[in-house]
Image 1 (cartoon, rainbow, N blue to C red):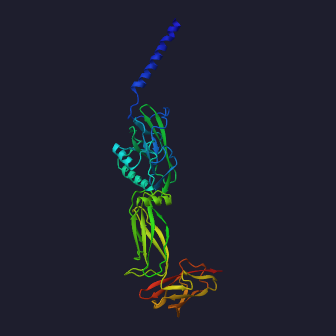
Image 2: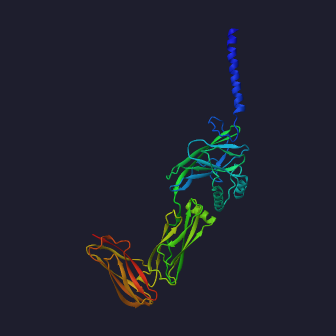
Image 3: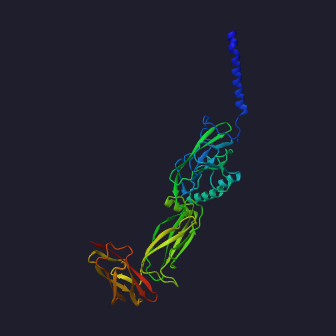
Length: 440
């Protein structure tokens, strides 16, 4: 009996302690929604996840691990994820690890209604109801930007736990750490409901550093200008993958009055088509229409010969202007013979020690009263112009070009040319490019 009584008392005390602990766990420290609490990884995970995440309105939930986020050089990369609480219970959202920062915003009932009017809900039942056209996607993106860029709306999971009511929709913003290299930004988010069900969601994106502004194409080949007063046009597109709007001004760099530029904001459908063509994101942009006049009133006509100009695109003050190369050819009163569209004088290969001389035939229209040599480059070139006979109503000329001995080495410079002055009712210059190579 002593042995039984010796063990009975400790056994009763142990039973009482276990029962008291169970009572305390159930009734005293039970979890209440809204309480600041960091759940343990040992808790049960809700089947399918308590929240559904998607990086785009038509994305499958929780499958955006390799999505790409574009950011400007020196800025903090970020990736926005839509999320939905498909259940009826409030879910508390917290940052699970010490990775990148995550900010959360939960839409009000009115905002959620406006969002549904702009686009289908991001809940699991309606995730596939996304507009068929790219233009609608651009419109939704702009709506999203206007709604969510309100100051003070975002709440950082670094500082607090955010409650998401049942059937609510919101956005989580994954922030990088200011890196400028092509790396990754990663964070884990935990969700817990009142029944202690728990799910972990990994948000991850690859970072691609992009320029603030881009231009397409970078070089434009203009149609030849052949007749007096002819007008031609060309267009380029300037856009931003990171900014919803930006100012833009365009001009020919030298200020030539024969060039005029108009910047037209791109429509949503134009943004969509450009995004499809360039395989980039197009948040905003301009269609720049460049008009080139062969001549304009109260301004000298364009020089005859190669046309090489620079289009200057000036955007925000913190962005270096972009340039587009414009090339073409101006045909006019003076030309080379025999080829109608001959574009340069070819001196061929010649011994550097002996130099070379070549005679080129030119013709000028009846409106040209005289033709003189105005300049030559390099300056060691020698040039002499002689008037010849008239044929078919056009004056013929003989141009003698000489490279003196031991003055040239290798290829002639790329900007080698003879410049003539055409005397007529509207005087203008004629540029005749030169090519050739001096050999040893």
